[in-house]
Image (cartoon, rainbow, N blue to C red; front, side):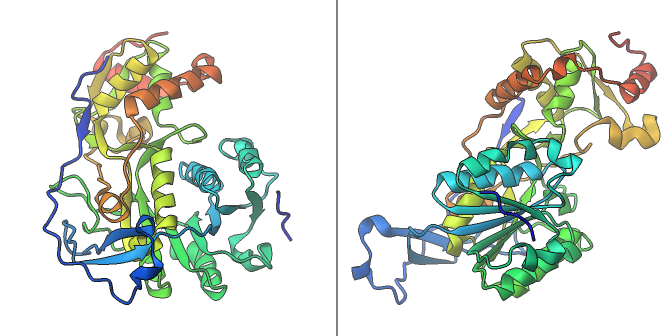
Length: 397
């Protein structure tokens, strides 16, 4: 039984495409009694998303009372990778909003993985009134025996075999809302970026099978597709990759032209979107959300923004990934292509807004980078050196 423990340019960033709002149909009050609702407790939410179209339609409106109840939320959190930090920030935001939170982290509390962030900061969850527990999701019923929840977020599984035990247990215990952290990586490449909800996905992707399953099992479900993210507590390199080279005076090797667009979000934006779904379950139900911020950045632009945050110059060099063979995927932290999604559904259905700013966030991230001493850490740049040698570019010694 587990134990519960109480120099950049202005073109670096690209704005999202603005959508012209369609005309609004007449409102229907359905069976709600307006006499029981005060003006301050009424909100409008539109539905729904078409899975076969890149455009949202405001096909119907409902009037609903704003939920004032506090939810009991279970976060099933991965024990590694970039997504672990999502559960950490989500837990803290829910607690700040007055909800009750339990975080179940996969594995053993005493494992070496728990010696890395964000797990080293889980005391912040406990101090905020949350609970933390470790265990095997295959035995989730015994790990959480006697506990009940209103909402479950699976921030662990990448395939149906991993998520099914959690989903089946949640269904059997009467969980009212099931949320899943999927991935924007399941979208097929498109000639019309950015990716929006409803775009074609890879049918054989594990996340797709999970989304299909939970849509069949739960009356109220939603799936969130993140991309790259930054934020204190992240244990997967993103901005750090650029800082490592900039502070050491090394050239920053970027594949291709460097004009490829991507989306790099602060995890605070992701957690606020998830919280919106918990607090607006009717609006969120049955929908896919690109869990990203609302600005794009070029690969070159990211290097320039990191240099500006550090107050240092940057030398960018471009190379053909094919020239380094099998090392190509290891050489750079992002995809060598336009890989950019927009959060249209979250804005339209949840009323979500991004509250972060990448240039300013990077300044904060660089301060922490220096604070933990990574700027002085010995780092090998073997693949970089291979690239620079092929380009006849000298590297700082």
